[in-house]
Image (cartoon, rainbow, N blue to C red; front, side):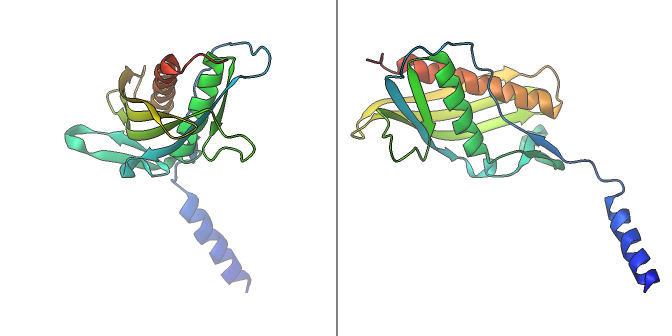
Length: 190
């Protein structure tokens, strides 16, 4: 009996030897230091965020030469990419406009947004050479569903190194730039 138990433990430990530790990466934006004053007067719903199907993965993908995609089983997103994009845009927009309150889709039942921003994320790519690309189409609609704007954003940046943490950080900076483009066409509140 003890031999069986000891053998099981040794097999379990052997399976763990040589494995890289799991790294979870969180897509985040650096919010500006805006100071909220009073009650927000413009409510904006973010989403739904729709992803290109290759982005619907929990592993970080890196682009190599010839259109190859590589991933490491130990490097993963800490949350679904669509949720991370919506959360990041909410934080960035609220940081850019203290008079604005944003909600990710699905928004609370008690608060129908004045405007909503539907997003199609076609690319959120990190390359082994440190280049990062974000390509999104987004539509702003009013409460009645009328389209107020239809835009496409193609943004590119470069991380300081091909390290996954640096690449994810640059993806967050591109997401912040997308929020700046969205905020620029939102009407003044009031």
